[in-house]
Length: 185
Image (cartoon, rainbow, N blue to C red):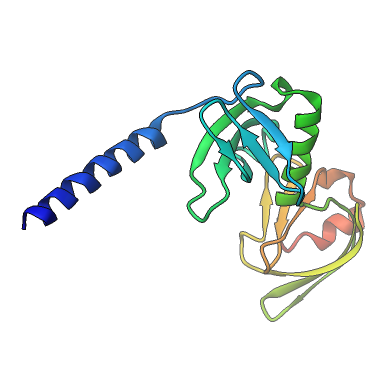
C-alpha cells in the first residue's frame, strides 16, 4: 500500500513539473538556438540545455502570419513544444531558408490560377484546375466547409483528402471561372 502511495506522489510531481514546462513560453533566438540539417535531410536543434536530433516545425498562424510565432516541437508522437520563434527573420539566413523549406513541405498548398471546370454530382464537386504546379483534378464535398473565405477575395479550398488549395484573388479569375464557383459562395 505504501509503495502505491509513493508511486502516486511521484507521478503527481512529474505531472506537475510537465504541466509547468508546457505553460512556460520559451522563445528561440539566434543566441539560444542553432538549427542544422541532418544527414537524412531533417532539421535538428541545439540549445544550451539539450540537443534534438529531429524537430517539427509548425505554424501557429499559417494563413495570416506564416513568418511569425513558429512552434518548434519534438518529433515524437507527443510533439511537445520546445520553444517558439517570434519572427523567422531573427535567425541566420541559412537557418531561415532551411525552416522555410520545411514549412513549405508541411503546408504544401498549390495556388489555383485557373478553373477549367467544376462539376456537381451526388453531393461532391469534381474540380479540374490549373495550379502553380500544373493541371490538377480533385474532389470536394458540397458541404459549406469545402471552400472558405479567408478575406474578401482570398479562398481556401479543401478536398476530401484534406489537401488544401488557395485562390489568392477570386476577382482575378474570369467571369466564367467565378460563375463555376457560385455553388460555393
